[in-house]
Image (cartoon, rainbow, N blue to C red):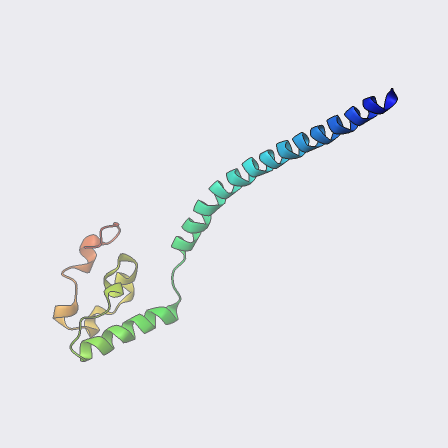
Length: 111
C-alpha cells in the first residue's frame, strides 16, 4: 500500500525538478539576451571611436603616392571622412584631390 505512494512521490519530484530547471534556464536565457543586447552596440560603438594607428596612415599616404606616380587613381580610402585630415593633399596632383575637403568636414556626408 505504501509502494504506490512512494513511486508517485518520486515521479512528482522528478517532474518538479525538471520544471524548476527549465524555469531557471529560461530566466538565465532572458538575462543573457538582455546582456548581449546591451553589450554588442557598446562594443560596436567603442570600435568605431578608435582611430587607426599612425603606421596605417603612413601606409595609406605611401600607397596613394605610389599609385599616383604610376598614373592610377589613389586608393578610395583617402577620400573617406575619417582619413581626409590625415592625408597631405599637397603631395597629390590636382586631379587626385577632392574638390574641397573642408566643405564636408564634421558631417557624415562622403562628399
